[in-house]
Image (cartoon, rainbow, N blue to C red; front, side, top):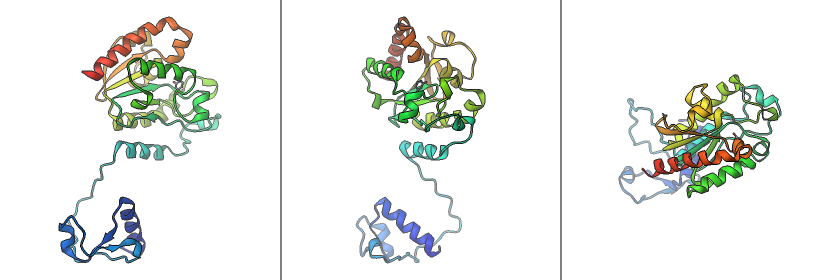
Length: 248
Ligand code: URA
């Protein structure tokens, strides 16, 4: 280990809350550090008496869901993988909510309000989604909300196949990290993308699918409900099913 690696090691240890190192080999065996030297004192002391094993296996560090989601967001970066970054998007709309949620909603793509604010479902359709969530006695903060596409398509046009192909792996990673019990696919686009089908939403809704370890329920998109309020009744049926799956 050279001096830069050692400094980095000590900096990371301090971030973890480690307050000192010791030359005493017995120190590792006890709960209370004896003779610890504060790192802040600038004494970079490595315990050279700890044998280094040649056969040491790589260490796998388990990340929390919040850390794993942050890693996905870092991987997306200031994404230029598809043409949407040249077509007027303001920012990437990653996802929002409880990283340990039992219930996840998947929409299509950010609209104008989401593009401005950086969060999914914050416009009129989003306000209706919030009411739908509250109708089953949950709060927005209890669930996780994401879209298939993370950048706003121009004029809210439908996402194109190459855009979906670039973006969907990040949604799949979000789902695999959160591991929800139930996923509600909002509208044709979310449902078709997740289920890899071209079946219309009218054929998909009313059914429960097994999907990546979750139960997937397709339902109508809130934006559709704003135009077709009569369909709220069917969405309410779907949400009652969601509720019963969450409590079963
Ligand atoms: N419609 C969507 O599909 N997603 C949003 O975030 C907003 C509107």
